[in-house]
Amino acid sequence: MRLQIEQINMSEFGYCEGDICARKGCKGVVKEHGVENCSCHINPPCGSCTAPRGYCEACGWEESEDEIVNDYVVSVNKETGAYRCWEPRPLDPTKIDWRTSSHTYSSQICEGVYPEGTTRDQVVEKVRGTFGGRFESFGNGRFKYIAYTD
Image 1 (tube, rainbow, N blue to C red):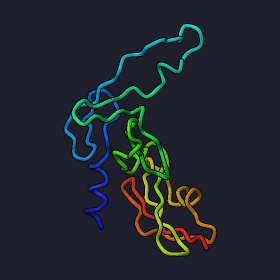
Image 2 (image 1 turned 180 degrees about the vertical axis):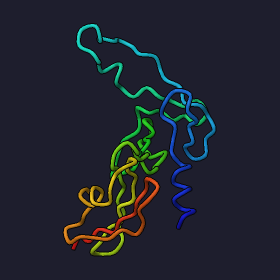
Image 3 (image 1 turned 90 degrees about the horizontal axis):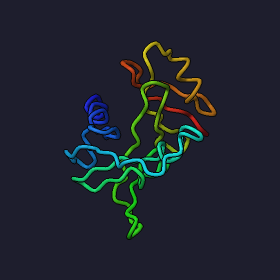
Image 4 (image 1 turned 90 degrees about the vertical axis):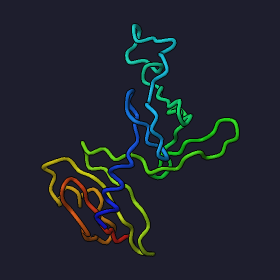
């Protein structure tokens, strides 16, 4: 189980300029397209400056093509409409953030991260199922919680 958690940490993708892309093992460097038609002088921040501009020349990834669908970042090929990539979205360790997956007919797994100093009760408040639940693991900024939903 511990190995699986370590693999999740290593599979986070680059989004900022200069980061390693890491999508499907890509070792390319993320770059950003330039800003066009900036209107920050009228009403900052403008849509041009806040729009996704990241890309990777090595694998062809374009941040503007990514969509978030049920805890996954989906990259769609604009020409064919086919999914190029379907990867778990990166979790934000600055807040209580998690992904859900099915467990049984009456429960789901909530696996995520939390900032330093967060208590178990604070996490339960966010992920508790309709009929409660239990922690499978909690510590070092990561948790796995089984939520009873039915």
